[in-house]
Image 1 (tube, rainbow, N blue to C red):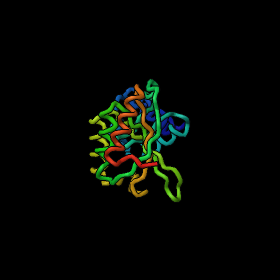
Image 2 (image 1 turned 90 degrees about the vertical axis):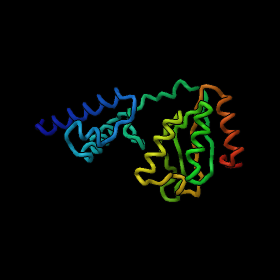
Image 3 (image 1 turned 60 degrees about the horizontal axis):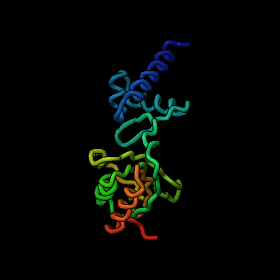
Image 4 (image 1 turned 90 degrees about the horizontal axis):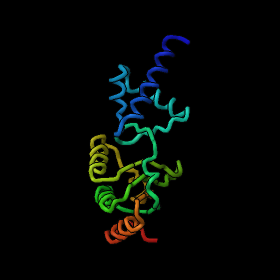
Amino acid sequence: MSDSKIKANERREQILFHLKRSNEPLKGSSLAEQMQVTRQVIVGDVSLLKASGEPIIATSQGYVYITDSTDHLPYKQSIVCRHEAEQTEEELNILVDHGVHVLDVIVEHPVYGDLKARLGVSNRRDVKKFIERVKSSEATFLLELTGGIHTHTIAASQQEALHDAVEELAKKGILLDS
């Protein structure tokens, strides 16, 4: 094996090492700085790791090695919401304030079909970080592709938490009526 392939393999092992031990998402730019390569090299490395079956996802906060920390949550459901982008923080705060974990957001794109993004927010700090990341990157929310309509997979340790959160979303006019 050539020297550059050994270095690339070692770098990918280091990326895995850091991701598996981190309690927070790791930014590609931070990994690049640690490994003394460009962010694009890290993007390629992570893509190769994902292709080899490693459960790594890219979130708005950085890369995460998935150990599915929501496995312990026995109650899950999907909800369909509709609101303006400016109401996203309110929507997410309602959910997390009831002890609900917001696992993802899904929109139905006319060309690509379902687009799903992992959110992984479970408290107000997570919500704040997510909103700040969207604003600082000048990105748009996925709901802007669909006139505000989107689906969330939510989970909680108690069925009552899901019920109460959904009820409050309905009262606020955020839950899409069936």
